[in-house]
View 1 (cartoon, one colour):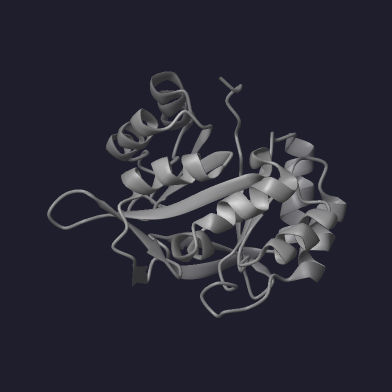
View 2 (view 1 turned 180 degrees about the horizontal axis):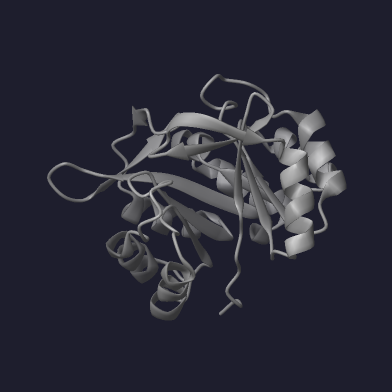
Amino acid sequence: MLRPRVIPSLLIQDNGLVKTVNFKNPKYVGDPINAVRIFNEKEVDELAIFDIDATAKGLEPNYSLIERIANQSRMPLCYGGGVKTVEQAQKIFGLGIEKIALSSAVLQTPELITQIAERVGSQSVIVVLDVKKKLFGGYEVYTHNGKKSTGINPIKFVEEAQKLGAGEIIINSIDQDGVMKGYDLGLIDKVREKISLPLTVLGGAGSLNDIKQVIDKHGI
């Protein structure tokens, strides 16, 4: 098993750093480049950058901003947002990014996981699922910043993603996002049972104990 990693997740909107609660009401909190410099000093294990505008507005990845972030970072970087093709992914890797996070595109075209993995290696292909509890039980994957339901069961899709060559799964709980009251342990349980891949969880960290709990129980 991999050593547990602490990975700050930076949300980018209109080239600025924002914070959300339950994926709603993005609040500007600063410049992403300054945030990268701060986390350089903190010596975090890895940094994840998500452009929440790109997919929602059908935009190309902001290659200029990605390059600026990569030039400033002293830690491995994962980027997600607007990546729909192998060519886009390769261009982003060429800017100094180590991992590509795929979400909406692979829900529509799962074989994109395999296509990118064959070019750059599975270890660099991350599948991100934004997940919300259903009213009468179970879970569903959402896209477009939590606004568009897909009808996809995340527990089943992580198995498919693993078979297709994903190197890591990120489960992002919409219900716990920004609330800082702990992770959705039931969701993590269900996903962990289905896959042997490295698993990263987002949404709910409010204390060191919250983080310790998922590491100790789930091997996150």
